[in-house]
Amino acid sequence: MKTINRWYPGITMVGVLCLLVLAGLAYSSLQAPAAAQQSDRATFDFERYTKNKPFKLNTLPTTRYGPPWADIVTQASNMLACKGATPIALCYYSGPGPTTPCVRDGLGIANCTCYEIPARESYLVDINAILNRDVYLKTVATCGKEGQNCRPTGSTRAPVCDAINNNTLIPGADLISTFSLYLEQRKNPEFNIRLTDCRQADYAGCMTAPCKRTGKIDPKTRLPLVQCGCPTFRGPYQVGVAIDKDQCVLGGNYVWSAAYRPPRGPEN
Image 1 (tube, helix red, strand yellow):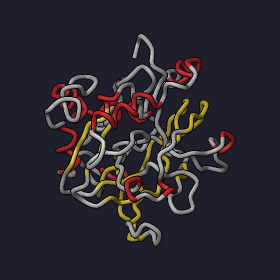
Image 2 (cartoon, one colour):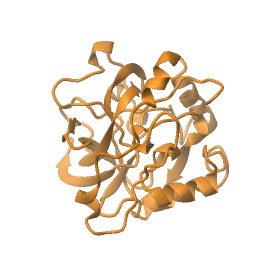
Image 3 (cartoon, helix red, strand yellow):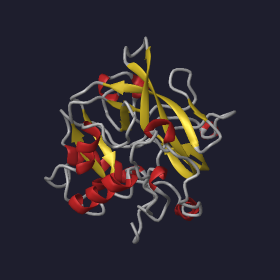
Image 4 (cartoon, helix red, strand yellow):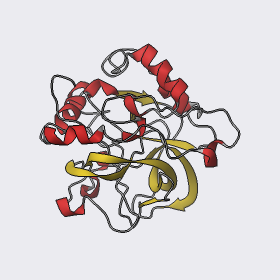
């Protein structure tokens, strides 16, 4: 999920989330309606992970800009703060490769190679992008539609945090893709967060996507590499690193792992 700047320790979480709110302000409001034109009917499933285990994909219209797998953030409180004893996957930097590519499978999923972030690190979850319907409804009931009652905006722990930490969000997954500042905090310029606005195209929505371990280690970060099944969506989006505009659309079957922060307005 592509957003935010520094937290735990450093600037307070409230200050960090203010950066998220500002992230999409510069993008033209003419792009916003385009994101809502795609049907919310899923063209994919997670059968490769869930097998015969019970699971309900969330196809509810969590925002007017697209389905849960569009990874839409309309305000800072959407990003729920979690921490737990389980590792998570970070697909924020995935796209062209060579270390962390995202490759479309032709069935509505991009197979994205992502970093495994160690257990007990803080992470964030977009309430609008929870792919388990039951967990989404429980989280909204507890946190409010925009996440305002749960941490860091409120004081309550979000149910989606427990589902991820207990590894019950998507049955069969080894771990779940969320957002973390783990790599950005290590002062490597390669992992600096610099949002780039891109016009309508296909992208991978990796927030809360299921992931499997590959057994491979990235020699540069020394982190394990995992493969996540990220649903694809067509719309305007932001890439979380600084790129030239002509790099928004990648060649072949490659797509960016991305998200969309609509321009602020009376309806947001």
